[in-house]
Length: 148
Image 1 (cartoon, rainbow, N blue to C red):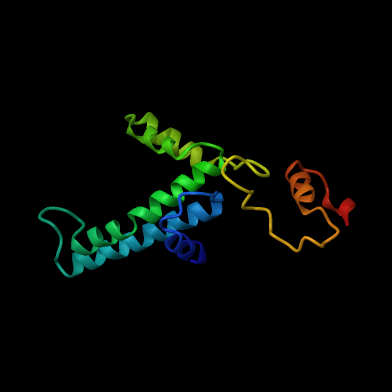
Image 2 (cartoon, one colour; image 1 turned 90 degrees about the vertical axis):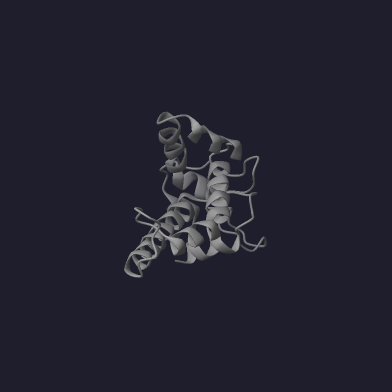
């Protein structure tokens, strides 16, 4: 839930990078809340004619459009791609599949054009350990015990 709230608070932040965890937890909670809004629409009988969604779902969709778009752009930045790659989804069938593949890909290790690696913790600069190299080597499958 904290990832969802983080994305809502950064609703107009299109710069930087978003981890897979941040993106997919936002998608999960957004789907849950959309389903709840649809149930409320159906129980209150305020759906549009012949549809399963209504006014509450539409309002929720409008309120979460920018946060959804922003976290998707930041997720693409983590794979070192521009936010313009969102428009690949306009290509029928193949575009959606490719955008899905881009969102499940692991992000680049270390800093890239769009910012620092979001997986690397920000720690005190006076610390003697080189956490970035430890993290990088752990992702390469090497044992971290030799660094401690």
